[in-house]
Amino acid sequence: MSEDAGSRQTGLPRILVIESNPAYRSVISHVVEIAGGRWDSVSEMEQGIKLLDGTRKFALVVIGVDAESRIDPEVLKEIRSLAQAPLIILDETYNSALATFEAGAEQILPKPFVPDALIGAIKVELRGPSPSSLVPLATRIELGGLIFDAKRRVVLRGETQVRFTKREWEVLAFFLASPNQYFRAEEILAQTWGTDASAEQLRTYFTRMRQKLSPFQVWCKLVTEKGRGYCLVLEGTPNKP
Image (cartoon, rainbow, N blue to C red):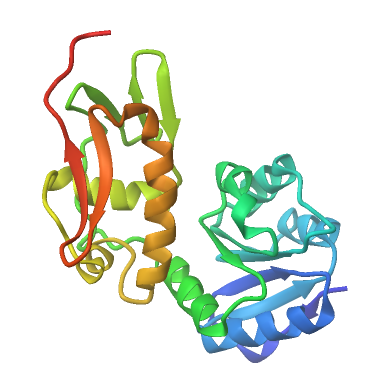
């Protein structure tokens, strides 16, 4: 049965919390209120899917995952399809979460989580990308012998292609507008996710993006230099494959 706080918070964005642990569920729901949302919370994935398949519309879904009960990526894809809204995952096995990102999660935070980090993540997703702050990017551009397909969020060369999440692509788009230049974390965040996000989140994403781009490191790589910040290095156009 859903614990519905909507009647007390009419007009606020509705957020679905799916978490089997009652203590975590209570804390997450409280964090949702602090972040400016109203919540429905359920303990089982099936209950969440039933709500998402009903008449209620949710602006965001927060899902808690523990080490004993992993979520099939196909189930996450179904949730994302039903919700048509961003997903935030709180995951005890944070270091092995690549499949969760590929299934459509916008953000993954380690569990136990820092409340302030979750508040910031919720605010970022509720606000959504700001057209005035995001660097515009053509649907398909070619740089350094690589193709950057913004519509599919894919980087490819020949038969090799790598897919990025929405938030990863926002950062990549920023760098594509100014390649071979260094930027501090606060400069990147101001033009991509906003100041509610943290430098620690950016570092985590940057590490994962660097790994994704590793097949193309001869032509394109993300680098970090102490005192200078972050940079997308694009080499000269290589020979055609």
